[in-house]
Image (tube, rainbow, N blue to C red; front, side, top):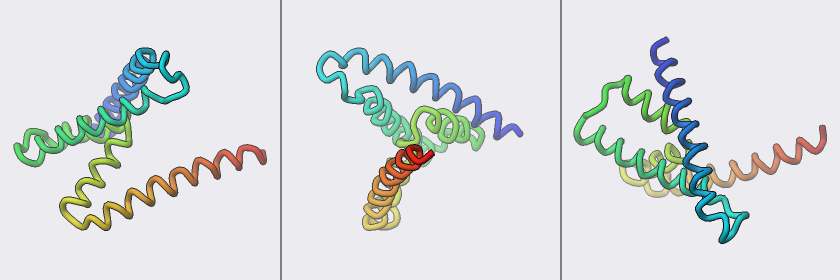
Length: 127
């Protein structure tokens, strides 16, 4: 039960931060190209920077307990952006397993993800 509360609390905080940060960044840049998702881009890049930094601290300095990892990685960063998890997992594949596995992960995540968005949108028109 504690693990669920840690992930849920972290996710709540991360989601609120994503909303506030994304909205603020978009407001700063919307005068240039108002149609571009500046906020989402900033959130994804920031999330990737944070997860890379925290994962490095965790791997090399062993600074986090299992509970802290749940709160920060699955909870906060999961609520802030799942793109950070995608970025980190792809990095680990490229670094530790095989660069080709990392490339396959990128192609599958983006290709199937965009295809699923299209399919879901198409399905909504049938209902």
